[in-house]
Length: 115
Image (cartoon, rainbow, N blue to C red; front, side, top):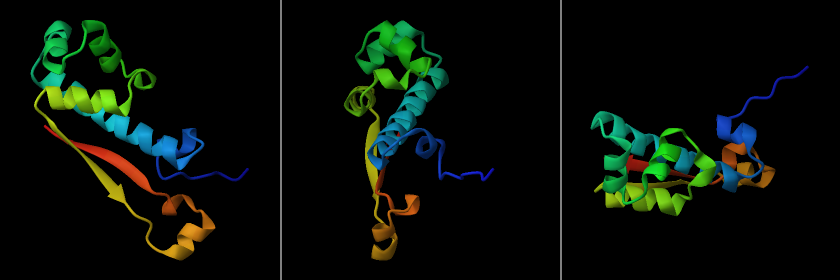
């Protein structure tokens, strides 16, 4: 049996580069938002006030329920808390790789959140 190697876990569980990019960006934002909650030792209600959402949304966030959050929602939460989220785009290295459609040539987007 031949093993398959993927650049990331997201590449392994998604069907398209678009899904991979979305999950990578959302997971990064969720981790950064959760880090703020943990670092400041916020109760869920206080975190909800900080991020401009309800307490059940904070519960979903801290439990890692990525499917319940859009990229827009997570960006809004970060901005509401005074964070400065940024999007970084990585372009393909060369045309030959792009033509082959290899995983290394996919366009990816990731959100880097500066707390």
